[in-house]
Amino acid sequence: MSTNNNPNNHSNHNNHNNHNDESKGKIASYWEVKTKKKTDSDIDMDIDTSTEKVIICNLCPRCCEIREEGRGVCSVRGVVDGKLRSFAYGVSSGLCIDPIEKKPLYHFYPGSGVLSIGTVGCNLLCKFCQNWSISRNKEISAMSIKATPKQVVNKAKEYALKSIAYTYNEPIVFIEYVRDIAEIARESGIKSVAVTAGFINEKPREEFFKYMDAANIDLKGFNNEFYSKVVGGKLEIILNTLKYVKSETSVWLELTNLIIPGINDKEKDLHKMCEWIASNLGVSTPLHFSAFHPDWQMDNVAATSLKTLIAAKEIALSKGLRYVYLGNVSCIDSSTTFCYQCGERLIEREGYVISRKFSSICKKCGTKVDGFFEELPGGWGNKRVPIQEF
Ligand code: SF4
Image (cartoon, rainbow, N blue to C red):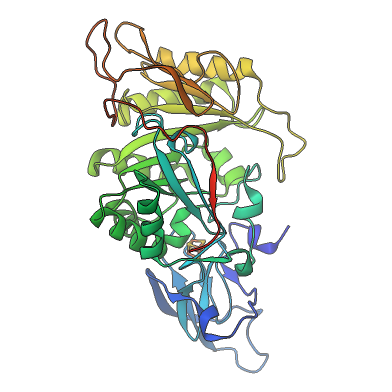
């Protein structure tokens, strides 16, 4: 494990060896220069009053202090020539067209295709990361697909896609790229979708969600100790992001909660979490409980049982949540949308595909399903189309 994985280690001196102009990256947003008294270990024996200039990244609550040639905890923001740079601007580790249901978003233009783009790095340090080969990758060279924001949007247009998703790794850490793509996408009538854990400071939060139309935000648990020891974050920050998105933006919000056996599956916490969602975000917020598989630093923890997921779903329904889904499992009705008034089956899915039924208005009682729907579902189906070049 790298020392970068210590959430309290705000100083980071990992060198990146690329010094050509291109590798300097794009000058980043949200940073300041601070003069700081050197710590004992930094001070030359003879100069005990020395100070130094450090760059503070103010994008996320870690507020990393970064010295020349160092990088922040997320690994894609660092200092070159005295300025904070994003090394993840205009380059991607992967682009692919997926069904929107894969994000997961079940109430945002179901059946439509979405151009998904990701880079590398993450500002959280989840020990259970299900995507660690991307999120913990520190190699800038892993982002080998170059594309300007305009080219990304043009690719979405070429395939007549409804939206672009910023996903695979935490999009907050490449906010400048996200912002520029999303701004052009909006002008072109293409929606933007964030798949994020929501660990961001207030000011950039406003900019990040400004051009978003939908988001799936991870609520990884409902316990402070779990967030600080296992996730490397703070529950309160995530709850503030969720409340902000719900009450101060028009972004369509869905939530994902990955249930890890013995780690974040206490019934008491699930009750508290679902009560909090119902009273702070509203019962119309879809909740996706997702099954964990052993991975990263938790490869000795068992996969989540179907029984645990079903029990979690029952808790959520008992708190009045209207739409509760189970992911990463195959079970009848795990992804069916029911009418919350009369229980009629309205949208049936097999995997990511809308199967036999699709209706966003209940034919039996006239109740409308919450979310964004067209009269007919999109026809993207289960296809997965990798994009290699522009
Ligand atoms: S975005 Fe990255 S560099 Fe900035 S504070 Fe967060 S982890 Fe540190």
